[in-house]
Length: 66
Image (cartoon, rainbow, N blue to C red):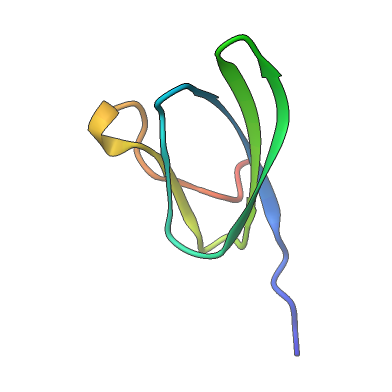
């Protein structure tokens, strides 16, 4: 069975913000300082990741960010 290559997206989150993830992913807390947390989301390139659309912060981005 072939395995898909997984890539990570690093994203900064504040209290109350949410991520929408369209498929299987791993979320790792890299750093926390005050009210800011830095997360690494690892998923296959076809998984879409978006900050909470209700906050109109960013549209969906592929997990394979360059």
